[in-house]
Length: 306
Image (tube, rainbow, N blue to C red; front, side):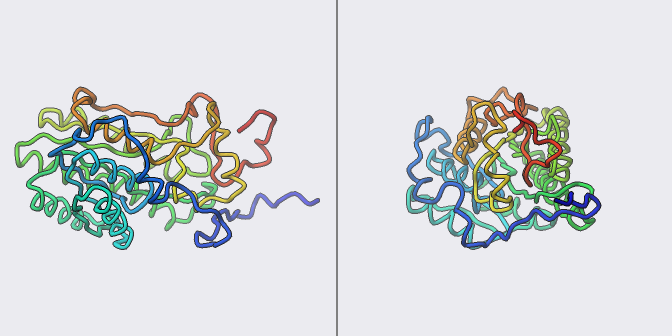
């Protein structure tokens, strides 16, 4: 058998719409049945804005926040998905949701979004930067367009949201809290170097402004999910997905609710003294293994390797 030509770019991205691929993540019925450790009025009167809330972790976080009594605002690029999240919340909690289709790469659009949330609810207490995206590929084969797309969304888009929210809180003389959904980048992220670079930037940006903005009463924290099964799994080939759970010592996948409950905790009064922190939710992956989102290369396929 001929060895693969290492000089040729490898293609890993499956067709997201392939009907033969199984559905991933929590569907609406399953999401509605999740139980929470928190009391029902934990976030009563609290206004929270969640980006990328049309699916996955953002959708779960918005649903839980509404169940806990929060005023919920959501944004994302797909208005139909946002409407789906709003309908789920309305059906199961009776609460209305502020929705606005927004491309967070556009700083002017972000300014408009933050302003409208303040106008609608009379303020904002917690911003959750969940929007982002990436695709599996060897770093050497990134196109300029592909690299910039990931950096612009995951780093720059997150920053526009952070800065605009902080400016508004400073101008209004009110405290605020930012939660950035990032990744566990301590050991790098093979086949996802673009998002590793962006997420690492957000983590250390957050640690920096957590100090700078403390005089304004603004806290900034991050959550680094590990292998969390969501609809986003459609970006990865099945041979890679089959090994994802082996990259942590618990040998399991998390789900969007695991992250939603962490967001609720950080948004609650219980977390008032947490600032500049990175909460890792990965089943111990940081101590154990490495996820290969495009499939483990033969070079690394040794016994005991995840």
